[in-house]
Length: 255
Image 1 (cartoon, rainbow, N blue to C red):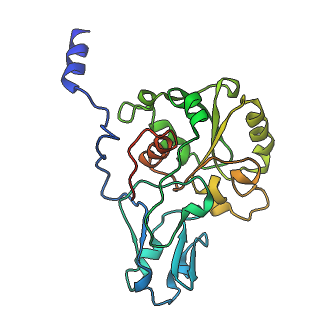
Image 2: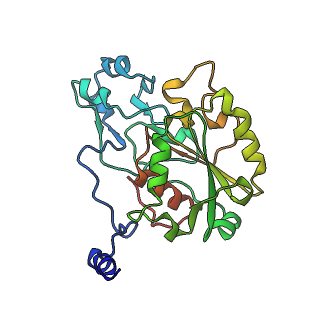
Image 3: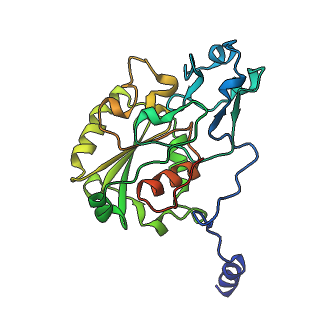
């Protein structure tokens, strides 16, 4: 036992210092798209390789809808003008889908809940996580937030085993038809007021399943959504940052 205690003391404090300072992300991390519309020559190569139709060529230049993007980076690789680059910025997410369309402009931070909601949820917020037909990648990164490195509980945010004990839902997956009723019943079981958060490309837009007859095409097709978190799957830091911005727990900054 003493050896175990000694080993734990030697390990010291291992939780990341975020939001005081940013974490060091892996070299292979693919973050927020950084667009340079002035470089685009409208060759449409990027549009042709995008598997989810997230890229559009508009009058003012290229745009990427991160609600649909699966961050495969094929568009960046094929672009001959380097008009698309995937940055290492993990801060993404929006209160409305329109805020998820990247066009080269600075990111608009997520708006915090209103004062009444912050008084209710600001210090203690419990979510029921619902997997609605996804591949479990988003669920894995949501679970990672409970590990010692991220320690989600230190912010007063945790997961509940029952929707009746929860303050809101975190929903992943495109909402398969088999899960539609279960999601609706789970939502109804959460007491008012409640929050709904959609995590991952499938939950935001249907992702690679968009348009499939056996899916609903995302959470907002059947429920009101308060926060959209893009990614396939979103990095745990993207999820954590979005939750803290919603709770007004970190200093405001642009990506």
